[in-house]
Image (cartoon, rainbow, N blue to C red; front, top):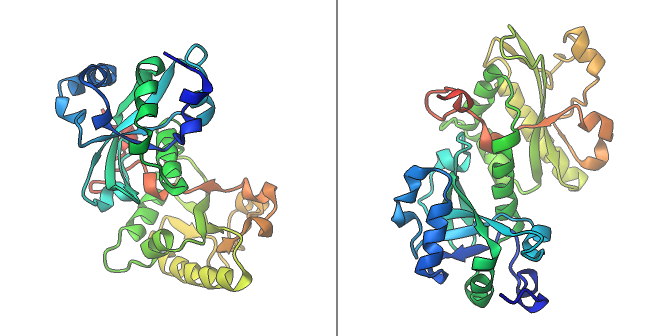
Length: 303
């Protein structure tokens, strides 16, 4: 196969996060995809690798564009069209996720449907079909990459804390927290400080804050005010969790919490906080809590 620059992925607009219609692959290539699936039970499911489905490129650009002799494989996530499912959008299941693509609609990905394929067997076909390859925005790409990374490196907060936050997000009657986290484009992520972090503690002290993009002061104040009101409602929902951001709770916290000297504001921008203070927080991956949506059982402890 010709591996000169003219047949490179990047030069043809094909990057990480791009979506490949499986219809561009011939029968031999589709069989190679099936054979590469990591779980044998999927290999007989020929319907997974069909023309109506897709493959999302997971390989990072440096490896994607490296010559096959240096980086011989490409990683793809096999995906299929899906109907919107709230449980899998704010997914409590790290093994399956629904993601909205601007041009396709919702697609479903599974951790068991990710394959490593020989680049030499697929690169030319993908490049030749470049007009059929569907580009993706950064939000789509980042969501999938984060989901993939968290399957290896998630650090779940204690169950009691997770249940408190999850219940508030999934409340069908009081949707303020869900609406704020999913509907406000000024919010980068929800971050949290928890003490202690062990699973069997009798009581927890929780600080929740919103990391914002660099918005103006008025926008920051509006978001902070709304989130503080939500935290006030959240405080008292569990007799085992104290919300530090509310009222004078931080003053009455244990010595270890006071000495941690956390930044207690309900919302802040990167320019508002010292890096050393920010590192006291961990991202609260509300999309990927490792607990099931219905029973509350830990997914990461399933047999």
